[in-house]
Image 1 (cartoon, rainbow, N blue to C red):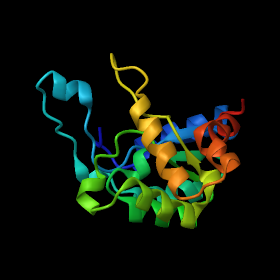
Image 2 (cartoon, rainbow, N blue to C red; image 1 turned 120 degrees about the vertical axis):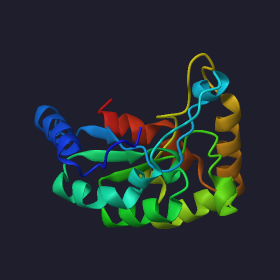
Image 3 (cartoon, helix red, strand yellow; image 1 turned 90 degrees about the vertical axis):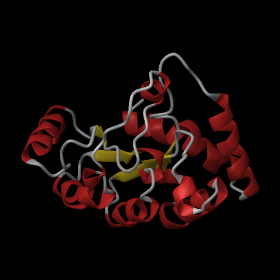
Amino acid sequence: MHRYLIHDDAALAVIDAVAATRPHALVFVHCGVLSVGVRAKLGLGSPFDMRNSNPTDLHAVALRFPQVRFVIPHFGAGYLREALMVADLCPNIYLDTSSSNRWMQFEGLDLRAVFRRTLDVLGPRRLVFGTDSSFFPRGWHSAIFEAQTKALYELGLKAEEAALIFGENLKHLAGV
């Protein structure tokens, strides 16, 4: 968990192998604040190295592998600005909206503001919901889905655009 940089040789070798074996592969790159709920429930700390968690580190990698689609979960988890910048520069980078997005407390943002910024920069076709939104034994967490659908409704997002975020984009990326 953030024990390496995404542009380290070892990470690049993995991405290279994935790209060679599966055209239009998906690679998830977790950035920002990491908090693993099951660790907290067990009373364990989260000793993750934040120095290796900036989405801008993905820039050169995404350019090197234009056929690979990269997904950054949780809007960059505290690095929204950076995630938007790198995604704006690299059309093969997508943002995932999942999780409680507790990182918003550090930015003074609410979910509507996050969605507004993200939609202004990327539009609805580069957002996916639910790729990283659960842990054992919690299962499906409907409150996260409901909060996100409410925020998008309040922003006036059209039903077909919301459908892209809540399933169609991910199905397209996964080749389903």
